[in-house]
Image (cartoon, rainbow, N blue to C red; front, side, top):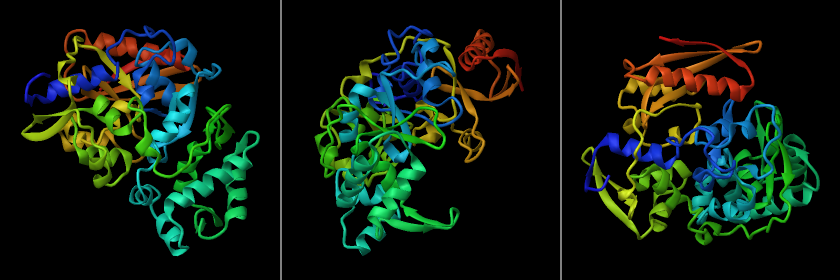
Length: 379
């Protein structure tokens, strides 16, 4: 980047590089040698966190479907209550960094549960602390989520529970349940459905009030959003974290620089403008919930409204074919027996070398899934 006015293309290339999507396949030293693990790789979709790390250069063999999950990694409910992969050794620091900053922040993150807590004259931060300590006492061995929920509901009662019409049952509010789990030192066993929660050995259970203020810079969620999704804005960071803009502004780093992208003011960490990507024509097939696609300024990545609607569908979301940060099109997998067909819907005509890279990356996906690649169909 390097100047006050930055082109959209350069922003996308910068983010692509910061996500390490331009690294050679299998070039990382280990599964933990991925920068995004400081911020978390969301575990949603059929290939989840494992493929998200593989496309960043992590060793595919160690992440392949059917392989034992690497002990060095763990899955925790954190930002937006979604499951994310982290280095196991970082979990205490992550629990601190992803905790609310204030009562207002906590209330926004737990949605409608905040109203129930207030009716019961309980501050949301206190409620999260109660839930966390109760969860930790319950989980002395691997515990299925439903069993945990029943025990929590029986022990805590109102105002921690609500009637759930789809379940036709009364149980604890979902979002406080999820947000309290990392504070209790609990993680999810990979690949379990329904989820199974387990204790983290040696976890330092923190106090659940204002932990976000004590975050280490490496795991600070605002700094990391600037680091991986810069140049960005206060509003985009707030949307990503599910926090009030006022709290994000209060925790905005001092070492930022103002830049202009498409005539709009944005911010980047000081010095990041000198980090210039060197890749040219690198193609990656990203999963539907890959971290690169979790940004809030979707118009920057996909300017066309119809393309945005397809890429970020509520149901049946496709993956993205991305070239140096620019979306080339979408992809959908279909497995029949032990054979995989990948259908590609391109938004523009592929340039020299791009189509062969699409085929190569589809073959990597098939190997990751432990099946043979039958065909790559381009429409």
